[in-house]
Length: 234
Image 1 (spheres, one colour):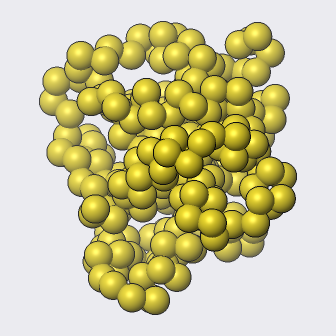
Image 2: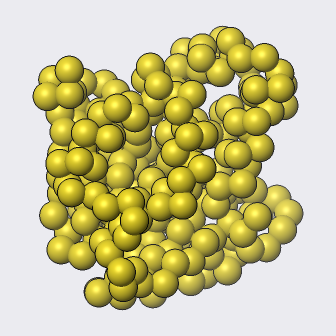
């Protein structure tokens, strides 16, 4: 598994990036319809946290099987991986929305864990403005190229880097606006914001769909942000 997947520019259609889905897949389908998403030509990139808290977490494998859907690993995928391996406290996972996963049999848990282990930590997509990076929580280094180079290494330093990329909140908690070098823009989820928040060249788009907020979908061609609010999706 490559920890950073790279995608060439989509010359046949549009590319979109969506914030944390958390099992709200029906909401995602309505939002894609609103945006005029064409699965024959368009691509959808997910910032991770496909599962937990929402009612349709089990549909994650359905979406991961689609050729137009590409996701990175979020902290909730990591929790599922750890839970399947017996390395996560059951009560902690329940608090974080993992009841659906813990109710599965061992074989089904392993199916999900295997799919989640295959997800990259970062994605790089070529767009009209250059390369755009996707990472669940934040880019922990000041240079994108150094980040992806180190991700492809081995050992404890890489594991710490993965943890920061999946769980970190250093940038958003301190409102750091210094840009990361060698990348045009970095999309992140993980931390819920009332509306998309730009800090330097990080753009945070987890607008809290599963918490009664909105699901945000950004067109990487013109950067229009489509949103569907929870009360609109009911």
